Length: 168
Image 1 (cartoon, helix red, strand yellow):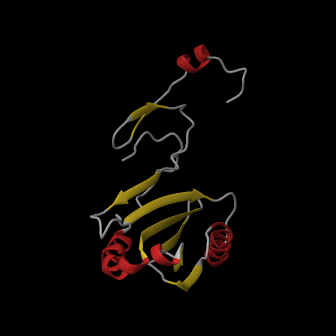
Image 2 (cartoon, rainbow, N blue to C red):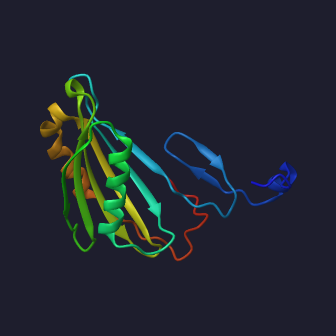
């Protein structure tokens, strides 16, 4: 937003309403939906396992393996005592995909995350599904995580998906 845009300019524009799960908000017509969705499941011990779905639109096409390697390098820089457990190709139907698993945190309360990276095109983007649980209870939650991951299906996007006012 530039300082030369005043509120009367905005109110005179077409501001479609975006509907999320628990809210509605008016946005400029040229917005892009880059939502992040987080889902929590029944607690195991004192921690609720979760799955987060995030879409990143790419400025340019990139090989999925290079994208995942870059993400894992960032994770290794940011998280304390991180250990990469695995990083493998894991196609999902016709979609190129990779799955990585890593742990981090204090020895008495380590977290484990499993990520599935899926490469989509038109527009170029990567969807990352991230499952999180305590390392000690991860095996109990992994079947649920795998079921959620395998149920992922991209929805068809219209040719002009900019400004779409649909959400969930």
